[in-house]
Image (cartoon, rainbow, N blue to C red; front, side):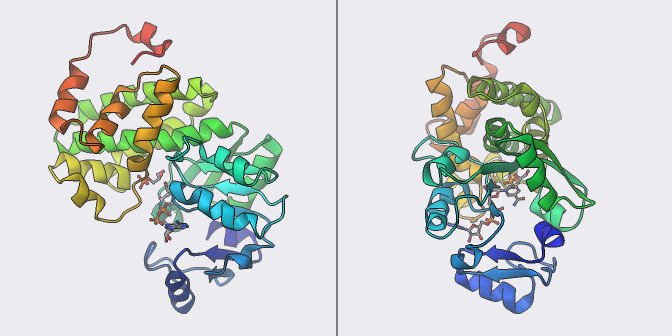
Amino acid sequence: NLAARNAAKVHLWAHDPNHAIEMTATGVNARRLPGVPLPANLVPTAALADIANAEAIFLAVPAQAVRQTCLALAEIIGNDVPLVICAKGIERTSGLFLSEVIAEVLPENPGAVLSGPSFAEDVAKGLPTAVTLAARSEDEAAELARTLATPWFRLYHSRDIRGVEIGGAAKNVLAIASGIAAGRGLGASAGAALIARGFAELSRFGRAYGADVATLAGLSGLGDLVLTCTSGQSRNFSFGFALGRGKDIAAARAEGHTTEGVFTAGVLVDLAHRKGIDMPISEAVDAVLAERISIDAAIEALLARPLKSELTQALSNEG
Ligand SMILES: NC(=O)c1ccc[n+]([C@@H]2O[C@H](COP(=O)([O-])OP(=O)(O)OC[C@H]3O[C@@H](n4cnc5c(N)ncnc54)[C@H](O)[C@@H]3O)[C@@H](O)[C@H]2O)c1
Ligand SMILES: O=P(O)(O)OC[C@H](O)CO
């Protein structure tokens, strides 16, 4: 919808052909954003070939489907078309960041990342939102930012692709922890501690993988962490909340929402261990999701960790 305000024509590709048919017939995306009209110049389609001549492509598929989608795109698009990743996650099978997946499958195409605190519903309703768009250069990022900017949707541009994608991936895992804590009734103090200690581990991870600290403290890092860890609008937070309330993992997952943190937790922890980084909260989420530990035992273990110097610890890889 944002792109359609700034371009003559935008194709909205849907993975499920019936979804495209429904949107064309009704002029609304009733499955995802009921009540929000689709602009007349936004053309739903199930035929990927329709976007062969696009000037830019925004990849808003689940993180684990980015490779598959890029492989299909590789058959039809030119080398100069920028691909903007809107998904938030890390590829589980390879341990690659999503920009690395694009670089592997479409090495000539400019890759970019759009991330930051933004619920699709808020953006679609025209509520004020600010996000970060990172590309290979500030100029490229600024040009892509202009394709989405509206009076209520503000984009900061950046060339720290890695930093922006790390924030989006890690915050989903940490939001599950915050949801669990809220569901268990651990209180607002515990919620704030989880955000601060979650940010410490997100920052350790980010620094080790080449992110700029300013990016980690910006919209796509701290900004999105705060949003997702504090709102029931977040699917990751709500999933954690359901677990905290005692729902079993299979039942909570069966609700069918895209809960990216579930897929990212294990690979995030693996990547952290490769660099000798402690991520105690993410490790606890991964262990709970893999049913290696109960929620109560995970909370107890986190609280029982040795007392530490906050300043010394902030500069080390230790959790
Ligand atoms: N919804 C938000 O507010 C929001 C905000 C920022 C980023 N994101 C990110 O966008 C990504 C997509 O999330 P969403 O909210 O659109 O999820 P969603 O569940 O609303 O939609 C996912 C879409 O992907 C399609 N899909 C499923 N499997 C696919 C496949 N193998 N190949 C291609 N498409 C497939 C589904 O048909 C569906 O249309 C996630 O990584 C999410 O973190 C979402
Ligand atoms: O609903 P979530 O948890 O996937 O969060 C959506 C966006 O990433 C928030 O910025």
